[in-house]
Structures are given as structure tokens and as C-alpha cells.
Image (cartoon, rainbow, N blue to C red; front, side, top):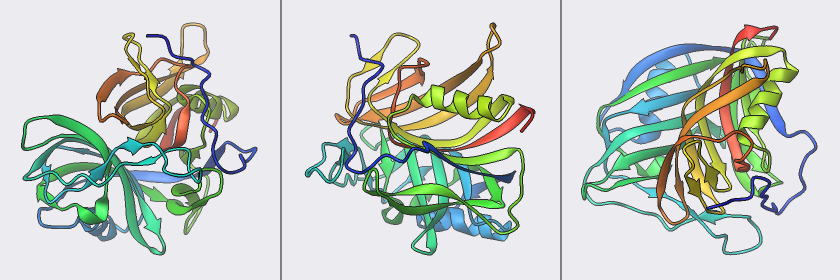
Length: 291
């Protein structure tokens, strides 16, 4: 199946000329367990607070949710949005988490998070999507790796371009330059190319991606598989930017996603063929270069 690498989705609002929001700072790795019987948000907030942190990006593995609520992409019911969410899905029993990525920060002055993941329901079927955090409870311990942000944070704010409230980076207490960059990449730019351009413009020649919650207009994978969809909910399992054989920067993104039909897809994204639908929230750790 062929898919147009230059595909675009018209957003309802004006597109700012600056296509990346970013703040430089520092981050420290913190590993902990999300404890059962806690609300998803509180299960992350408590360990972060005990470590003196308020905002982070995380990867999660193992454990389970229940009760659990999630959505997948869906057509927008009105022209106020380019795409929207499905009705709430509330699977019966325990949903066992495979892995997920999380952006954790504040919305309306209180702790909130944005999470995309993959899990297996009580019926044995693998599914994925966007977790509704205030309606999800930890059922079995979940392993977390968090990069706790220092001098920067993620804060949910109204975004006129997409007409959603989205996480974006803001300067935090004690803000200073550092080798970490909290960033939000805007719609209709290739996800790999945008990351490569960001690093190139700052003299970064090697970087690791931490966290990574995104949406794309379908997807094209290195193995030749294609997701023909106007909307996905995606997360980065692992990501890096490095110099290729010709010296040019190349982003390698191993991702998992669900499309508007509820179908899962996963693998290494093809560079230059995967435009962002609404957002990419990520922390970029510069490993080598002038940043």
C-alpha cells in the first residue's frame, strides 16, 4: 500500500511560525514502582514529590490497570477539531500493561499526565490507546523510569492551532541551560525530520529521546508496513539521533501506535514519511555536540 509522505491535516486554528516549543534545563533519572490501589496520577505524583520533583517524562513497563478507562482516535464530530477521541472504553477485569510513555506535569494548577500505551485485556487481546488518567487505577505494581525535570516543566495550556489543551514546556524554578531539552513539536512536520532539524540547529550530533507521547497522520514503517489512517495515538519505545554514514543526522524511532480503527502497529518509523497530527511531547538529551 502506498501512502503520501507529504500528507497534511488542516488544523482549525492559525499555525504559529515557530514549529517547536522548547526549554533547556536538566533532568535526573529516577526509578520507582507505581503502587496498587492508587489513582494513576497519584501513583506517579507521590514518588516524584518525595524526590523533590513535579514534572517528568516516563516509560512504564509491566503491572496492570483496573478499573481502567481509555480512548482511541476518532473523526471529529465538528469542524472545531481536525480529529477527536472515541467514546470511553472501560474493559472488564484487569488490563495488563506491556509498556507506555508518559508526560507528567500540571493542568489547571494540579498534577496531570498524558499517556499512550499498549496492554492486554482480560480477554487476551492486545490493545492500545490514550489512557484517561483520572479514571484509571493501578491494579498491580508498574515499573517506572522517570526523567525528573529541573529548571523546566510540562504544563497543559490551550493551543489555538489544534483547539486542544496540550502539554508544552515552560521554564521552571532555577531555570538554567543544560543538556536536556523539554520540547513540543507542532503539527504537519515529519516527526524524524523535525527532531533532526532541532538537533542540527543546536550543534547536537548525538542525542537520546526520553519519554515521547505523540500522534501522527497514519504511519510508514521501515519493514514496509503502512497504517492508512488520518490519526494515530503513538508513543516512542526508544529513540535516538545520531550521525549517519554520510555525516547527516538520522533519527531512529521505535514506536507503537493505535489507529482510529483500534488496530495496533509497531516498529521502526521510516524517516521523512510520518507527519505529526497534533503533537510530539519529548525530552531530548544531548549526548554529544555543542549544546
